[in-house]
Amino acid sequence: MLDVQGGKIRVVTVAAGLVHPWSIAFLPDGKTLLVTEAGRIRVIRGDTLDPAPAYTEPTGTSKGNNAGPKWLALHPKFADNQLVYFSYSITGEKGATLAVGRGKFDGKGVRDVKQIFVADAWESSGNMGGKLLFGPDNTLYVTVGDRDRLCCTDTDDNSLRMKAQSLQSDAGKTLRINDDGSIPKSNPFVGRADAKPEIFTYGHRNGYGLAFNPETGALWQAEIGPMGGDEVNILLPGHNYGWPLVSMGRNYTGSLPSDQWYHRDGMDDPRMFWVPSISPSSLVFYTGDKFPRWKGSMLVGSLNGLNLQRVSFNQPSQAEKREPLLKQLNARIRDVQQSPDGYLYVATELSPGGTAADGTVLRLEPAEGF
Image 1 (tube, rainbow, N blue to C red):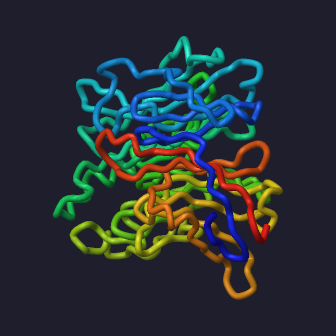
Image 2: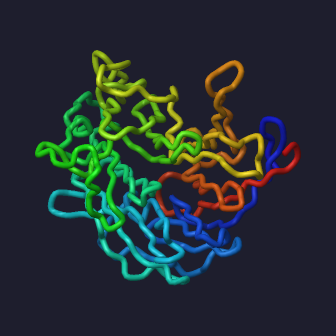
Image 3: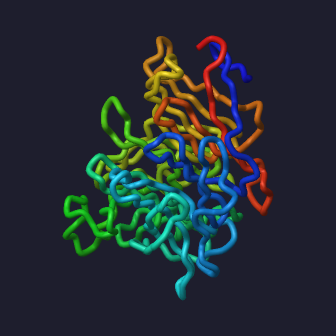
């Protein structure tokens, strides 16, 4: 058991021996989970990991840390159509970019996989993003990283990062597509010759977390900043969130991102930010009954912060209170999801690269104090 504010929680190992588990998705029965790991989709049934993968990425699709599948999303009508969506990288003559695939889960495997969307974010390297989330109207939101291959080098060259400000590129954007990969006619830039119609919002760095706030219905996004300056933004259609001109972080040279880095008219400021960086990997709002004091809290997975951040709002002395959970595990939190019965599940890994099978899926349960 682990101590948390006001009580204790129990951490139960659901599955171990995974290679970089990335994303968790619950089937409607609440007892079966799909989880992505390096190049595969695995199935967990009743706390038991199926030995055979449900899907293995075809040879040559992608390589290295970008090997897919990455993020998972089940169609809102999964009980009827069994459709599973996942993001992954593809390579071509122009380099690599993010794609979205769709297949059917027949109870054992994900079959008849088809590529339904390819982002126009080609580059030789750089962050892919790839978080997937279905909205209430069954449209699919897709994050795309800024694809800055120079991000961690000793240069202030902003040319690649500025793609996040260009409406003619999908890099550094959150996209909105239909469940078949087509473009919703209600997207903010549909009909403009100078803009990609799939763009929903722009000016992002590397968006990894997406969730709808259950109280307001607004779409919230967590994204990794540069050296510091991780953000949570409230997404509004067509809005610009500033990167790389506005950021509370710094370039990897130590310089400020611009001469007006703190705010610019026409660009939305973050709802909250972290300095130093925690590298937010995922985001969910807790709505269950197993942890009554946590109801309404926002939970954010943290990679280099090695914890699960619980953010409680409307506190007496501050707008939000941040509590780091699971620090004792000393693990990178890749994903956090609420199960249908109100427990919290996290995917963890100990090392960011290589092929070590040190990943787990864990369940958090209330113990003393809850």
